[in-house]
Image (cartoon, rainbow, N blue to C red; front, top):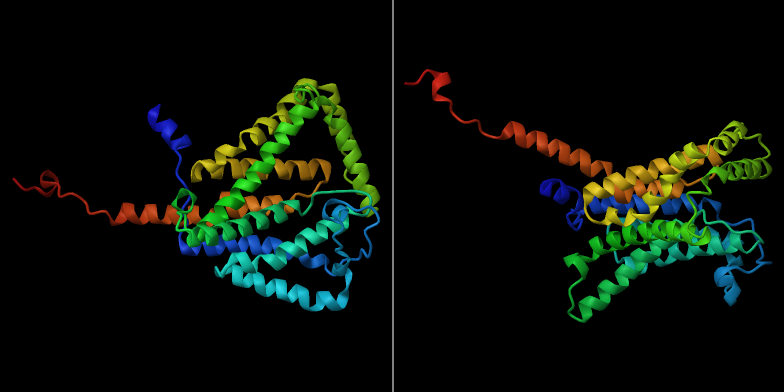
Length: 312
């Protein structure tokens, strides 16, 4: 029992090798770059200011083709420098500005969404870690967890992503008055609403999900079992920060969770899944560890068996 407890819940900060950090930063950069394909933005005004726009910040310059003609490549160069580990405190500023600006501009049209929010908070965490690393170095203070600056940036990204899941679970409990599980049978209504929104957004008939919506309403116990697992998964997602094994478990579980929601409700969580893949599941590291374990096993010297060799 002690070994099992230690295997699952031992606090083992994830200290990445240089090659692993390069791959993880590449993943973050790839997710960021993929979200910038919408620039220049087709939106030219902020009629219903939201977020920073409500404070007077104007992001309509992101719809200027001439400005984006040099700004987008500049963001690409910044991301390349970030991948190789050059000063995140500087190289993340332009991509962060682009992602936040796109989100604010889109949400200032009268309806809000959080499609790229996960990228924005991840970049913000990485940038803040870079700032703190500079401050700590100048103050002769050690970094939290004895990380180096590059490891700290990835660690803070993981923390901010997990914080989003925990906050989501807490808001479900608060908004439902603690009866979120009891309300899960009505999830069928949300399925109907989301498929209708997908139709009006794309003018393409969505897959017929009426049977699933009706099934959840007619079978409340099955709704509580199949949908209810998402609440504890999000609520205890902070355990993913303990060690690589828990990071893998929660990474895979949350990835599957988002995939199911996407298939059932036609809601895209591509950015969440990509960041989970690179920052938590991290399949390359597990493949390398598996290969190393095999090599260690077969390269281990065998003991000499005198009886088998016929030595008296």
